[in-house]
Length: 575
Image (cartoon, rainbow, N blue to C red; front, side):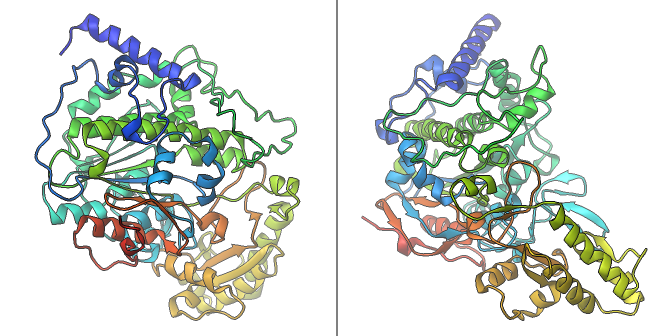
């Protein structure tokens, strides 16, 4: 260990280097494939990885086998597939490396109806559709407990208690007990689900303190290196630094990248953006704001390097897994939309952060020993206001849409004599005890309520739990939407009604955008696989995100349980 004075000096150097990287990006981004990337100065990057003043020693790697020694499973929360092609001219780092060296599947989809964070990550990690993994949404209503459930917390413990299947990391550890599995994300549900049932560690961002945290599910013992990493308070270097977009290459034309700024009226939604509030020092407001900025991705990439370094991932012949989910595209994307300069800047910064991560892996493990799978949990709807600028149809929910759906509930009460009765346990979940006590079957009430909601102009389809359980597709329902609804359905966890709105109808009033529909803009996500011995290619064959875990398992040569996904190694162009 170094002495206290040297520790403080290194700490100040780390902070200065970090802040300069966020402001300008100079020296922080690789320009091409990792084998050709020049490392930034020791003070600039390696001191960031050295922990709380500890000296960095070269690790003596153990003998590696013939197969991969490290698997990277990467998710970009709220990433549309078209982002990788539309923003490609601005990439010079890790995303460029993946596109130049991987098999890029252009027709990849989350093949279920609830396109949200928890079910999307579950499909990637387990190879199971939400109806089988049990993760039917970020949350759901539990009829037996009569309470709202959060997907990553059960019995007051954050962990995978609601996950009904095993994940890639579990398969790896079952095949080789020496394999190590770690997951991390700004979001707890992403880290928890990506880690599977039995990882060595799962970590997520604490919005109150800016530290990385875990739970008792993963053991009572706290890793010393994580405590030291948190004590370094690296994020504090960005306090008082505005978020402005990084400069792009001169050859990049913003119009060709699809940038569009709708009129936001009195609201000023342009750069620069402040991170935090008017406090005199970093506080809970600042750390909360970091979560909603590109800093969250920057911070995760560095924490991923610390995991690799301190846990020795990829050091020996037992393949290890690092599953990481970057969240900034989602937190920023909800506010600004897919055609914003802000979302573009998130991806430019992520491209550079991934480049630094790959550069670190090249140095410590060697990219020739690494398998990478990159995808996303869901896409996002375009802003209706941007659609209008482009001469395309789009609609945002207004009071008449809300009143129409509310009116359907009121009419149901009148027709069935259910006024003043708690016939709905929660939103679209019926209360079977109340319904049956009134002399009606749940199926009959479902059917009539579906008819009433279908009368609303913005509604495309309404599917009932009875129909989904029986597999009886109603006439006129889009077959792909029907299949996605079936894949998402769990008889005990899913609601009694699934409302599908018209394409490009945004179920959100006010400003911003969201996701959660079975339409292509929410389902079509990146799907890139980089494997030793496979040549780069663009593959237009339809694949689903449940195919990711089986494909990675097959590349590792390990067995897997019965899953919904299909291994896609045959589609990789082998050299």
